[in-house]
Image 1: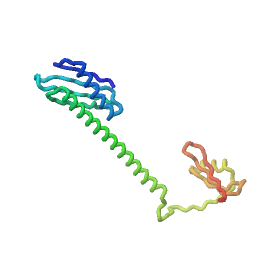
Image 2: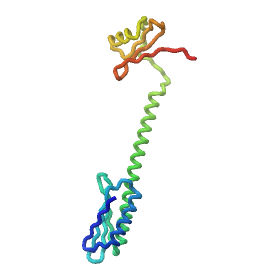
Image 3: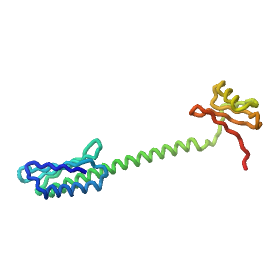
Image 4: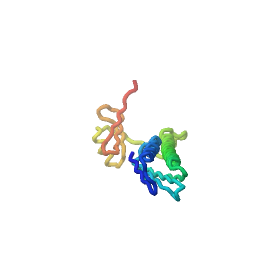
Length: 183
């Protein structure tokens, strides 16, 4: 992580710069993807020492924390604590959103599978058709199904003399269901 330190109305000593580097780099323990950090140090009215830390995480909004103390080191530390708290809060917020989305998706899946997989207790047929089954090969059955505009067709296979079912798949190909005896 790159840390930019800017001082206003104060001399930036190597000791202050080193303290800022070590204190701000500890923030990386809380968030994985910090792009860069900016630290603004200033003196107000020769009494108040002000430290502002801006953390750029690559998201929409950077995290900004400001602290004013009589000691510059305390101000830097207080601003770092505030920034850590904001980053922890943002991280927990995204975690809770993710878990809420996963829970909602799981709930939706459960209701979907309950609806699809569990048959209703009362089975009611709206239409009952009696169809004369004629012997034909699968190609003729596919032609007949297409001619009538159906998505499936039941026919008697002329070779095996068994009832087969042909259906049109979503990709435009055909599927064939042949019965087999249970072992």
